[in-house]
Length: 335
Image (cartoon, rainbow, N blue to C red; front, side, top):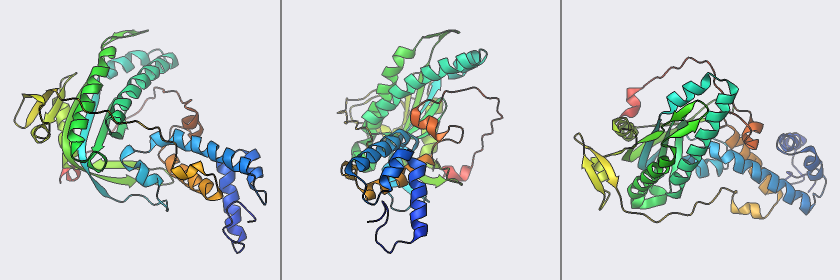
């Protein structure tokens, strides 16, 4: 084998040039040179595999959870045009964040860093609670998130795990009930809405930048539940309530309930993403697959965040003057 990605001696020189460019894009020069030898050493393959696996693990959180495994394991880098997923939908909104961020915006970068550190800690804990109950984040928007608990992985237990995750998140918020900062004390609470049904997902994007569109009537209903919730409350639909055996519910308006208590469910093992099992056996094919997956994951890194900053977790939040526009397409909320 005359090059790391030459499948046979008949591979043309144009293909070789493209692969060398790919190596240079993803690996340090030292490793690129080692891998371009006629017979790359086992040590070079192991080191390159470890380097690329670490990069992929750092980028993995940017890929929306419901499609991560499907997207990263595709042979061809083609977008998901449309897919319907069944499960339970959790919408959460952080109450008190606007006052917190507005007050700290007046002191510039120091305020930005203080808010960023606080919110990062808060959401890291909340995301753990979601993952520990088998869920994953579909969309993240500043002080709000949408999580999904798929029937594909949780079977008929997805409503119970979604409800248990919501309760765990509210318990977690107790430590943030009075946050002391340089600008004063701020109470932070969470409003949560839950509903079971289906969501439609599709990838959108151009120029190697992707985003996930999630829509559908059931998602709209979950958002309605969250809008009905007071800070600290969990509001669910009657349909989801019927699936929660032995749960304690308080009736609200027609079709909606306040969730007061739900039976404990077994915690799931949260396994950090480290790549597919084939990465345990470094090879030329392994390196190619890793670089393909990294290219896919990089497309989900927001334009405002340089890829290297995302990889090094060095990017700090900042306040920017903007004009915000919200658009609603009613047709996307219909079933």
